[in-house]
Image 1 (tube, rainbow, N blue to C red):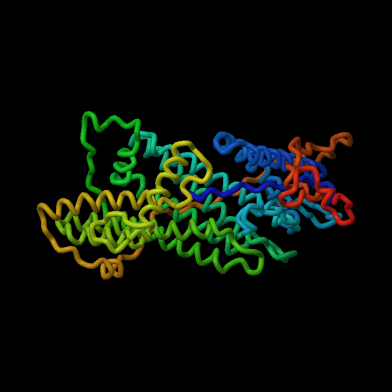
Image 2 (tube, one colour):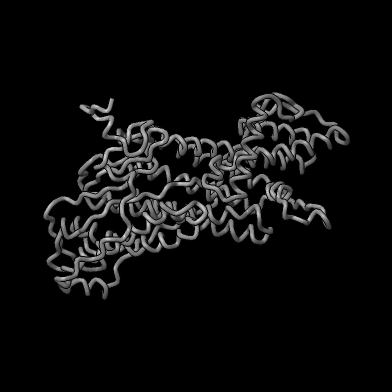
Length: 475
């Protein structure tokens, strides 16, 4: 958690091939330079190993932020609006056409998503904004990836930083959703469709709300520290579990589940003919909803146990396992059969991914980790109830039906779009140097993006494509 979005890449273009400006002649060429820097940063990021990509994220973020004022200015000028307090006149020689790789559109398994040809400044701006939102989400993932190796104080700082990045992503998606688009020139791709932008905004808000609970959840921290091989606290002190505001945390989790359910509905039916959302993202959103509801049931169980109702608390934990999809119908809570083996194997794979920093950790939205916490608490409470309290455990179905409503925690601030400083825009009034053709980038397209060269047939030895062509006398 959060979802590991793939950063898109883009083709190389020159704005001077499409537009010119009588009021600010240097603007198209300068915008080309900053776009080329962004393209290079995205290409380089894609080619780095997963372990090296985290350190490169600030470079991509700076490149997007540097390019945004120029594309926002061109977008406003194309619609006749003012930019930085003054009017910018542009004339189009032909309609702008760019290519961006659609990274959340469903494709054939094993193949990379294709680049889509897009027209107009609006689509260009949407992908730039979406890239910035994805970078913010990856920065949040970088912070959260250290939770299993840090102390409680460091956990709090990492979660606070991750929360800020997720709220930034929510604000960016909301801003992109409300952008003035003008007359539509083509069907938007599913990546930037209004329904997708709204869904991704809800998803980022759901993730930011859920980690509010994670910050002050002593049970999740205790289970994580119990698995941490470097933790030596057990040598000199027992784990302390402070009292928590369980009912409040449960309502925050239910608000998360509501946002995740809204995102799932928008992603499932909001493509409008522009394609289908990747199944991995759809599964992640459903897992996030399950995790949030399971965690809410756990906190309601904690609230009952604090009040002396241990039997009801155990019932809530079993309801949490039902919400998570781990309930086997056995009251002793032990894992049995193939389903139990699959859960254990999945947990071990996830632990290895987190420990080694592999790509794709957390794609279960924390469901496996929550299942561990619920099982840990259930074993503890069942033992206490069998030996001390001896309370009846009621059925959990009526309890799940009586869950309270969710409660919001965040009030996202609107995204403040960067704009060109007046003195910078004023310098654009000077004509460009005739010998300056702008920076076009240093990174070349990868082989998989070269659509002009046919690939070898499946199973063929590399470099023998010509032997399989029609008319070949190889055989």
